[in-house]
Image (cartoon, rainbow, N blue to C red; front, side):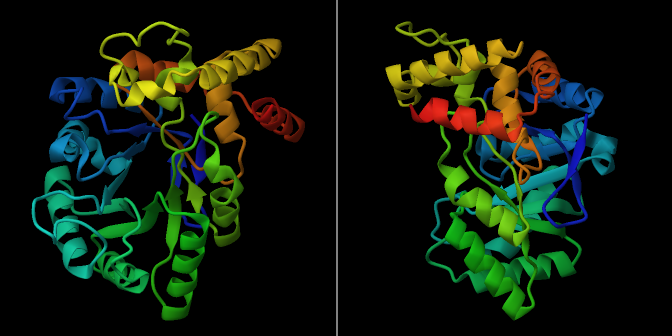
Length: 310
């Protein structure tokens, strides 16, 4: 397992990370222990969770699964999405951040968080207030680095300017929905990451399984899969299946699988620090790691873009 520097920070993370959104929902404590153990065995040391995953159980399960190995890994968690019924149980305000970080520390059973990320922009709170509170968390030793999630390019630029001009901690990472079927972040967010020194942490790299080849055109999604949900099943459309067919052919021409291309494309961006891939079973962790060795040159990256634009 190779490691990459997270933006311009001194933090290094494994090229493949574990998305912990299934912990506490589709995966119980025993299943979490198995996935975390498999990840550590494969050399993965980056785990990404959030205070809302699994109705706040994800952080609990992850903390217990790591146990004494906590200091061997990088834990990233997020705050900002509604966690309770009250108006103050969300967002990027100082009051909420100071309470949320303490709650995450307790659930994770740790005295520091390696990477603390705002889960989505909060238009009701000035970014200066959010960065100020996060800076205090860093200076108090509760947090090592800070990052953002689901920010647009202009919001990354605005946050960086605010941090630099106010003497506050800067975001070192950006986490965005990015894969071969959802490339919106390529045009604006990726250049912003490069310009302002943030490492990109793509999530949903396999498009909820569409890029694994396990779904068939015209057939219902297998029971228990993410796209079996009626709201998510909209992704099972002809346009996506046409793209998958083209991508599979592109990969096959190079002696690679569709899964390898999905990871390889993301890891071929200089801005990518780690690809966050969810897993519910140890075998999925092993498959993701073994499929992460492909890299595309500049001509191949252009070819993929042209193929998907056609």
